[in-house]
Image (cartoon, rainbow, N blue to C red):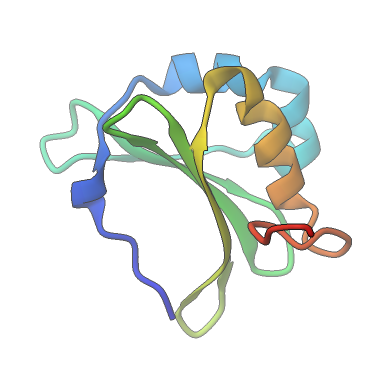
Length: 113
């Protein structure tokens, strides 16, 4: 089981991220459901979760180098990281998030030879 350390990531504006992902991608990934997790003071977004189905979800974080980190997680009796892609540029975040949601047909976060 892998736990995310939030020191590697920084707060961001969720409206900009949702615009970069795209409305239709969000509907395809999670049916329009978006969970926003804020910092302790409630002023900034820490992460966004797009619940997929069957216990899977896609979580997106902003790294300190202004690239996105996308993880596919399985949440039942704890959180299991099923794949991570780091260093995703804003123009690619919609495609990477959609790929992360395809848990039945796509091995996410693994290098293809």
